[in-house]
Length: 195
Picture 1 (cartoon, helix red, strand yellow):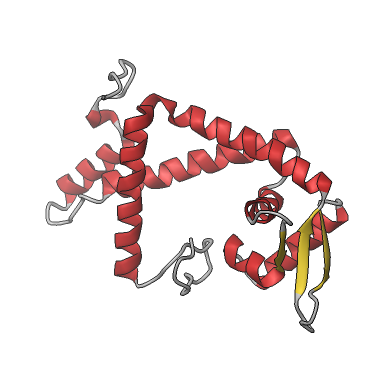
Picture 2: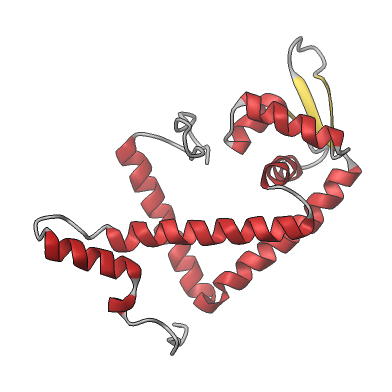
């Protein structure tokens, strides 16, 4: 079942991505422009979603890096404890970035860290009750807001879009010979199943 068309949508020619593609087609007819409508809109959506998430997090008094750390621990299940190495892999950041995140969160009493038993250099990070409460409250706010932003698509179209994006991501990763996603400026991950 398709969601009814919105009457306030821009005509196709008034869309910035369409205008860019039309301009390149006019100026350089041999230039392939078929990707512009997809890639430009993905970049625009990423910017809008990122900006809105940062606003929601600022209102909640938590920064994105801290929420990411707490969320990875929370999703790991009881006892909400992981090694710093595993945190780095699941957060898609470097070991140095995880160390900084853990230090900040520990200062705020959101996590504790301790040596891993029987492993000389390994460190375990555990979610504290305060960290657990913060992630529970904040994740609900973030995900409710993102659901609100997507609700006009309706459930069937959201599922269809999610599947198309999954296929596109798999195809692009295959073409680029990378797996997983890294932050801008970092190399892609080589571990299967990440991302």
